[in-house]
Image (tube, rainbow, N blue to C red):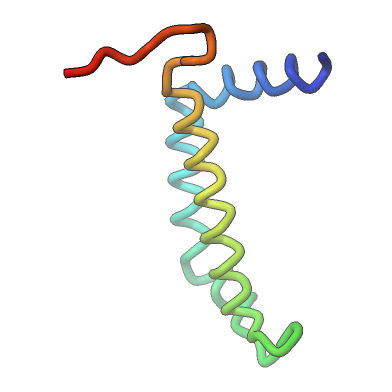
Length: 86
């Protein structure tokens, strides 16, 4: 029950337009100079360059955030509602 109420509150907060704007700005900041300079080091983790891991993980996290946003905007079809067919 705790996870359901927590998930419901999280989904409600993610519906805010401000959240979309904040994540957009954060994504743009993360691909600009200061962060690229920090991660562009001659270090490799498990054979992968640090900058490559930074871009790959950032890409995966952004997909996860977009998924959460789309889940909040779609209507709930679990209560027996059906989509109207065109």
